[in-house]
Length: 239
Image: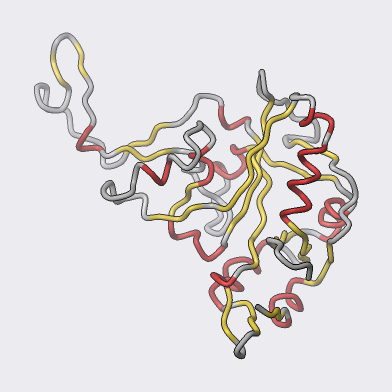
């Protein structure tokens, strides 16, 4: 493996991963994850920011709903951007110490929790470099000439039911509206996710590949395809 690189593992179908290796990144709309009912992939709160129900106040006709009119407070509440389900994301897992077990003084292997959390995503896995993907996105003509904007980075995991401490700072990573798409509930933390969010600079991107969006960034120079079972059980790396 190259030094000083962040390694990503994308699990899925062989033909889809071979397409990524050739340089075609496929982005799913956020709605796909909100509507997915599977426990390992679906998240109906994707990109939504939870609100503390005790701080909510709704007025009507000079009366406050909860204190004056006795309307029961909701158990939970979330804010989201209208029509943001049309924004597109590309997801992969990070291969880092956080999902590893130490095999020797300097050698690491993938841990059991990580393996259990990702093996359902597909029979094959593509190992590649986040550094190369970011570089290729920056040099893509549509990005370079401001037709497409993108954000990339790791997901922050936290307990979304706790509204104290660093709760608000968790949603202010870069102080832009895309931050909310890089925070997820701690129940997903074993997936150790890294993602790319793309959208148009001046208007939402329209799907160009079924319900998703395909973007060509050039054939990857460092990318290797494995069967998932083999990859999870045999991958070793040194510090």
